Image (tube, rainbow, N blue to C red):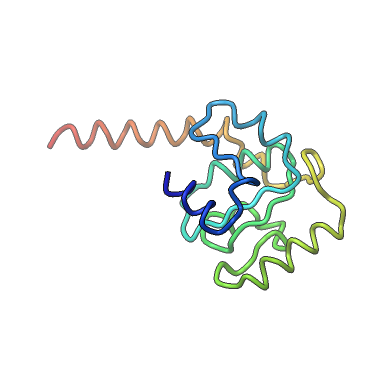
Length: 135
């Protein structure tokens, strides 16, 4: 509701669709031209891994986690406090005409593929859960 109000307040509501939590995000990702992540903090950003897996061009704020994933694609990063830097990066991506799913290859994706890291993370979480149950 807060996001809908903000979209109306700044006049972009007719151009915004808020889908809520989805289990079928991959289908939506394949319909995008560009994936943007404006996070101010990240751990292991599964959202970026999904966008990388779809081969989407990504524009992400240069924060830990996102910088780790986009190591070989530093041209995909922008300083989060700079709207000018963000706009310049969008223009650069547009000018390269590398838009849409399958247009970008991420060399380090295999290291971070969801099928690999998800189960490793679950194993770690289960270990923590077991450890904390003893208290």
